[in-house]
Length: 128
Image (cartoon, rainbow, N blue to C red; front, side, top):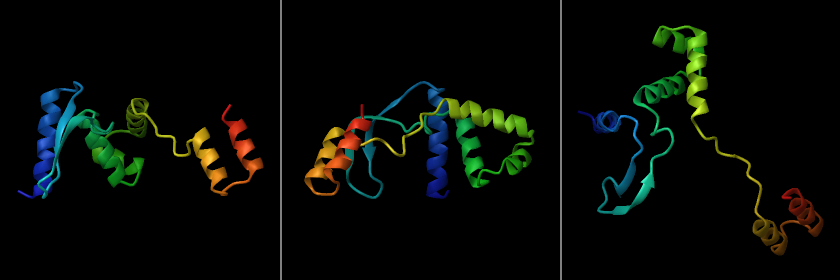
């Protein structure tokens, strides 16, 4: 069995075993290295989805977001696909891709001469 397929099967078994209950990973080993890290690691949010939703999202990505293709693959209608996508999206936290800089970051940029004092004042006022 191809190693990538084996890991996929292992993940499916773990997902079925936990039945949607939250889990914490306590040990991580780097493949091909003699390095292991212990601690408490939360799974990424996509890995916390039920197996059926993981399969659905994987298919959606492979279809490049084509709902028409998804309709054919899953044999369901457009509203069904949209409804499922909306349900999954509601359970996901979205990362702010343009977070506001902290006060310390603004002052650091000012100190390094990357921005003017006026720009720093504007950015600091925007934080309020």
